[in-house]
Amino acid sequence: MRSEAAVPVLLYHSVHDDPPSWLAPFTIGPAEFGRHLDRVLAGGRVPVDLDRFTEALHGGRDLPRDSVLITFDDGYADFARYALPQLVERDLPATLYVTTDAMSPTARPPLPPAAMLTWRVLREIADAPGLSIGAHGCTHRELDTLPIDSMHREIVGSRHRLESELERPIGSFAYPFGYNNAAVRAAVRHAGYRTAMAVRDAHSSREDDPWRISRLMVRADTDVARLDTWLAGAGGRVAPFRDGPATPAWRAWRRARARWRGHRDPGQRHGHPDPLPGRVG
Image (cartoon, rainbow, N blue to C red; front, side, top):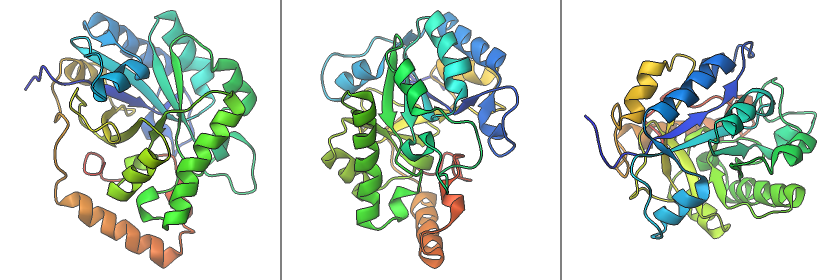
């Protein structure tokens, strides 16, 4: 059923023809990405940038009718090579959420092997027309399972690093895996972010929670027909809505797993989303 209130916030990860196997389910090819962008333009949606959406969520100017937002998570190198040029060519704004510790080689990288943006490249593209940069944590960990001090370091540290490297304020955060709870959202607000992106596999809206914005995750099998359904305001729930019973149960299981593994599970750091898409936020 179509909803006039629905605002599709599209979540991409990687745009590449030959991604690592672990990332392939969340990757589309450059040509397919171009087709997606053309459908956004052809479908009558009005692309808006993050600042405009933030203003609307906080009670400012209303959004244009049939708005749409485009976002990317993690910070893969293919964003600069394949995604950004196509966005700029079509004059489409987008927001890139960066996992800061993945930008520099380390003994224990926070994500599985994949080509990531470097700080030099991020600085080069940061002023591209329509591009906004947001934080995505330092090490891409499940924030709602961490001790409070570790959770705060992820939220605050990633912002400080980005602001230092890019010499500009960072006002938006994306929860790794989309995982969050009331304590995590409060920490994000306290850190000074004005918005935060969840996942939830649902449409956002003018009435959505600014610190729990719902997004529709684009996967390798998201074809143009599915995208057209989303752009028509159909094919999913519209936020705000209450969590189902699976969300707290899944969170409790993950917390128990984290305690048992002593927060040392490399699987927590993988860049792919949770195995129960649409049931967590």
